[in-house]
Image 1: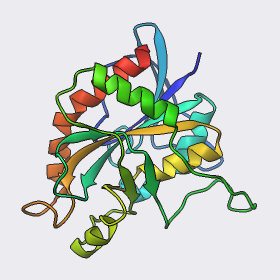
Image 2: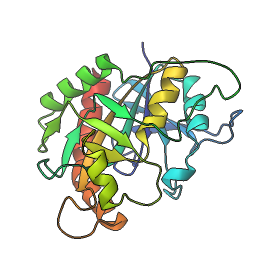
Image 3: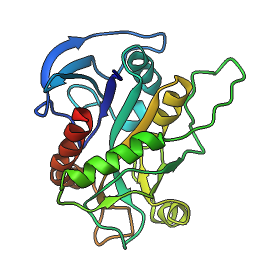
Image 4: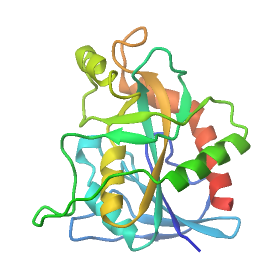
Length: 238
């Protein structure tokens, strides 16, 4: 049976949907992962969880060791679902909502395992996992709107984007975030199928009324967290 790995972020960082049974501290040639790899069960199905921002949620986006995270997971799983928070690049989008992006843009600070060799991979998000996640979201009867055709634009952090940057990014993408794209690319390099459940928790700078601040984003993720857990539970149970 396929082993599922979950990378939890701002909008998913508790184990209350699983029964925790193990915690494995590990190191990699790329350094130490953000957190131990936890093993949990839902019904009789084991899953693995890595916390992107650390056990204490104190690792900022630009300091995440993505290579160590994916390297550690590749020994344990053959598919990964990343849980990320994002900002909406259009005022026409529903906030909050849930997105299962179809593609991503990451033209700068691209992570790779192949710094010293010529290797070209074709990045992608697993269409099979995407379809299954969307089906699970529909069947889970979550209260938030579900989006299926979004393009996620990766920025570096730690700061949010300027209004001018948001105008540019909005011409090419639907969501803006700081974490998903490196995981997707490194997973492809590692032979791991990857897709993401992205919570849309705020309007990007200049799109909505008022200023965007991190504290508000974290507060907004509380509403979407329940929906994410319902989707994951149904996906894992098959």
